[in-house]
Image (cartoon, rainbow, N blue to C red; front, side, top):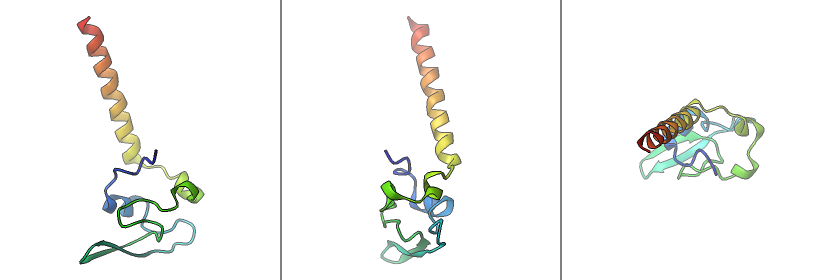
Length: 89
């Protein structure tokens, strides 16, 4: 699963996909009929990485605090729900 699938495209461009991590290359990415953004040339207009399975090491090892934070909250909510369910028994 690609953890970036649900990240907003503007967030991706700001956080990690604003340029190619090895070459620094960026390309115009059409966001809508009247808007473009500079982004990694491998980012599709829907915000998906077109080379995800073969992405550079810098992309594979990028630490995304937003994703880690959401995962941490989800784990915390799951633990609280389990505790609550056990208390009802």
